[in-house]
Image (cartoon, rainbow, N blue to C red; front, side, top):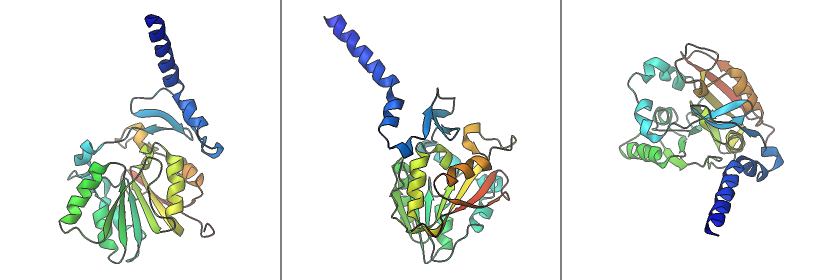
Length: 247
């Protein structure tokens, strides 16, 4: 009897584990049945959205890489910040803010506005808060996001910036919808991703995105592609707008 019970338990656990992707799909509404699943590649999670396998997340232990001294020269982050369409009173959401590498210089550009630094890792937000408490510039507020929701107020944000983060979102469709809801009508998402079209960009494949892929995914959540600029050495600078008619 003991062996039979143990065997049945083992079978039940095995069935539960192998059936997990279908359970996830069946638990969501029809509009969110947008994912497929496969055996994970070396740097992926095995979850596929619109033909793209989602990459693994870079954890807080790699924070030093975000703040490496050579980053401005390699990626021309100074040009990126100066090219953002901001006004002095803009409200910005830095989603996937990490250590606040972009949060703090953006705060300097919006002295009458605010920067909402969003991350799903509290350890990253702790870094930002410690820097803010040490006479950091401007009005900066940290927001602990969820994997499917940045937890931002509706119709409150002028610009959302995502730098090399969107490709790691485990729930890009749900996150995208929530971001659109947070934007004011006419607000924009600026999406920065390493160029998948360029084989000389020294980044792992799943951590890059092509312009076509990015446009398809942003249009799927109701955004309009305004423009793509490639003045950065390795990344696309892509701007998407929330239609004014969406109240």
